[in-house]
Length: 442
Image 1 (cartoon, one colour):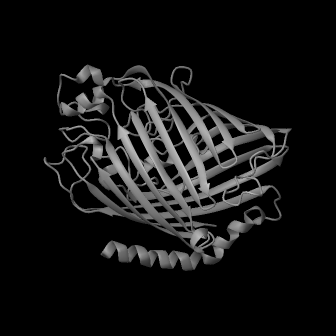
Image 2 (cartoon, rainbow, N blue to C red):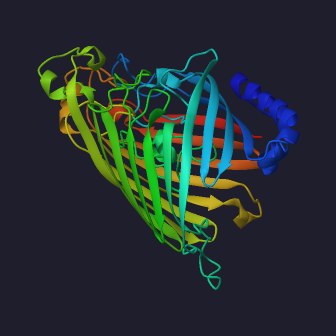
Image 3 (cartoon, rainbow, N blue to C red):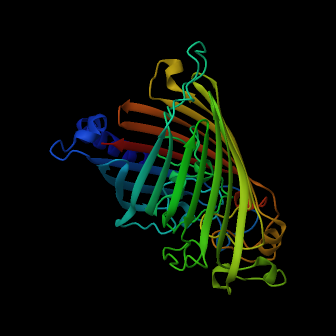
């Protein structure tokens, strides 16, 4: 197929051009030796994704995942600069340039298939400041309590947390860089592609349409425990770019407790958001209603969830998340899910003598509450889903990928996703979605 040939040619060209630059990832702190404390990193991610036609009982609706063949691409380039003032204080900024065409306009699914896709992505380059914050760390001393025993070779040694400390950040941030982390499935360009593996899809965290917001957050590390708290700005309208600066009335508050052990971790996360939202319960006796055109009133939306990771053997890891939201209001800033489950395994390539390679296999199950079900079944439309009809069933996704390290700093991933009941509708699907991803760091 033409799009596959084009993508591979692009991969070859980019890999050749950046092979030398990628080696700088090992020397990131010395890119500017005359400016001690200053660091500069770059990255680029290209994703080509497509799906063929699939079964559908009725014609596509206003917000349906297209039942015909679609080809999509995304291109994200980032430049991160940091300056260390010493004594625990740093400033960090990231500039991004993006371009792309999402599948079905980034709609038609709760579990969107490309975690680089944004709700405001177009077939032209856009440049913006993604991150700009100050970070200060206070060290209280302590020792590393998180290393696996040397006499247990089956367990993968966890990253060292060598001291008790408090970290505070303020500015423009990415909430997912702080909350709901998981070693085997999190936001990034070297693991799963589906949105519901970078966090729970029911975790309606504060963010603009690009995934960033302003706020204050802190993390206390103490022995085997971490406690995170954050207070962030919400968008003025759900899933839009403009941020609401009236944080006394509209906000997203987060609290997370983490318990670590030698080979894994368990996390409990709770959040509450407040902003102007539409209540589905007001429109159950109407049809043809578009939620984005409906009146919105000050409302709360919150939820709780669990997140676990466990190294089973040295090169095999297990992960799982479960999250549930409350209320009958529309989603605020992420995607259309009121409950979400996910689980899977990660296999390190060292097991088959391919250091840097990785295989992931994961399963997702998303749900919406009964009021949202009735709203959609009546022929109404949510912000990004709505087929004009609904025979409800949980939306399910099976994803697997193989990440191949070309050399340090250059990785190529092949990905397959199988989607059952897209947008919770048994009348549609299943859908097979395929992708290739090239990721370069320099």
